[in-house]
Length: 69
Image (cartoon, rainbow, N blue to C red; front, side, top):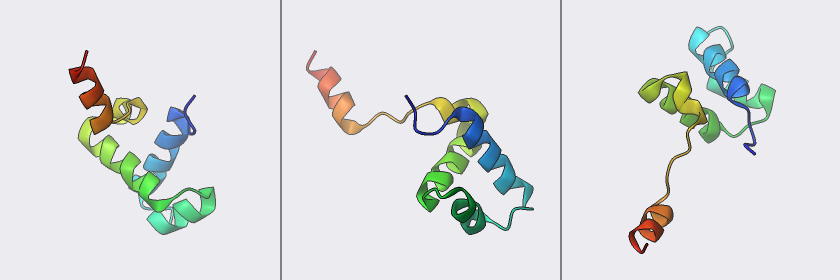
């Protein structure tokens, strides 16, 4: 189960993009999330829209493990 719901991620990304929230630092402080987490969500949104927020990045280890199958 994901730590944050897709709806929560969308809410925070929209809040950041609106420019009315006081910026990245203000949002992360208000919602008590790491700055890097919100930055990742914003990057995911910019690279693939809101559908991209529910996808997980594959790690190198999982790719290496698949090569042994």
